[in-house]
Amino acid sequence: MRNYFIAGNWKMHKTVSESVALAKDLVAKLGDCNEKLMIAPAFTALAAVSEAVKGSKILLGAQNMGPEEQGAHTGEVSVFMLKDLGVKVVILGHSERRHSYHESDELINKKVRLALQHGLEVILCVGETLEEREGGRLETVCKTQVEKGLAGVAAAELGKVTIAYEPVWAIGTGKTATPEDADAVHAYIRKVLAGLYGESSAKAMCIQYGGSVKADNAAQLMQKPNIDGALVGGASLKPETFVPIAKFR
Ligand code: PGA
Image 1: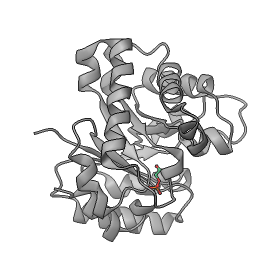
Image 2 (image 1 turned 180 degrees about the vertical axis):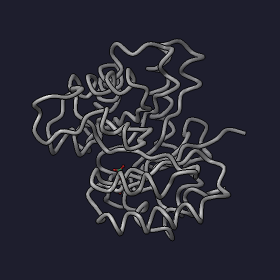
Image 3 (image 1 turned 90 degrees about the horizontal axis):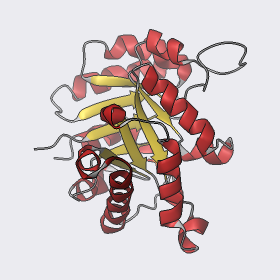
């Protein structure tokens, strides 16, 4: 039986004390969950949440990372700082970073390679806007984001890479791709990965779905053959909405 990777992206929500309270609650309620689990609080709460999840099975994630190791980069957070706090996974290329902060595929790729070089796991987010989908560019957009995002990444490093397919129009909108629709795009992404790394590497890769994942649609999504987990935004902010997603089966 395969393990799913269920990850919570808390985005720009919660103070340190609120984050610790949520993390402690999740540790208590998810001790018996067998999936791979991650929570990504804001940078300001990483240190405290790191303590709260210590010894549990919940991995500590960060929502972003600077593209340089260190130096004069005002406002950025380095891979060393994240590792120092116990961060194991970093979310890169989230659509909010791509669209609100104009992060390019080249910049995202630089971060992906830097994170992997220092042993962090990466969740590389890809996905099309509604305009791109309606304009028939879904496949081109996903292919470009996967290929450029993974440029220079060796097959041996893929065990530390998860792809999150997040259609931009489904994020925070309550609109979810149908499980069939999402699975078809996941299958396409796997085909792109097979083109880059071969069939068996592509088959072994984890591809999460993200975009309005909730307790009532998680099981249907996870049942699909190409959906290996979920990247959850809004519903990851409360135990009563996140725990049932992590325990979807
Ligand atoms: P959502 O966000 O679950 O609130 O749609 C998903 C994400 O942005 O990762």
